Image (cartoon, rainbow, N blue to C red; front, side):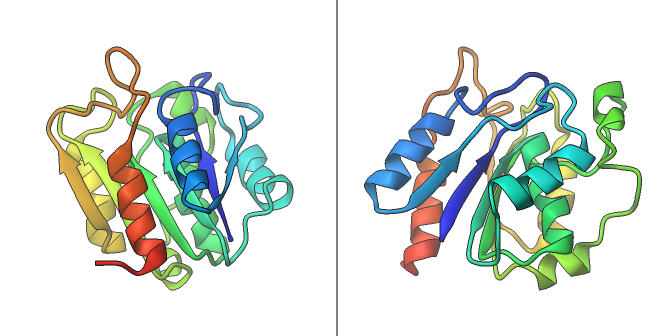
Length: 184
């Protein structure tokens, strides 16, 4: 099993935000973590990211995807087609948000297949924040209701990138470790 971190678009890389912290903490607990910058990280076209996650990162049914922002979208779309051990979503959403860059990625050109996602996943953990400047909380709550996520909602975490940049995310590490070790 491996845990694959999927960053967001807009030029985001695997070396930003809390990704290194999560990799370091989970690796220290004995997990294998993959943290790589995906190609096409400005727009994040579905036609590039899904094959990359499948073929290069080799995501499979024994693996966990941890997606942040458009990385969460990629994780959900991946789970429409492929089984996974589980999924963690941070700042997940369901529409292009009226953003041209989001529209260009192709992720929102068809309806969501919630039943397929649920059938391909035994569990989902989700993090959202009411004060996210990019993602309306109603979109995160919609995801929660359709995926029956283990859901953590904050009022002060923004887009989980912080002002200044958020470099730690212990809540994610703890929730994922509890799920993977089957602890209450």
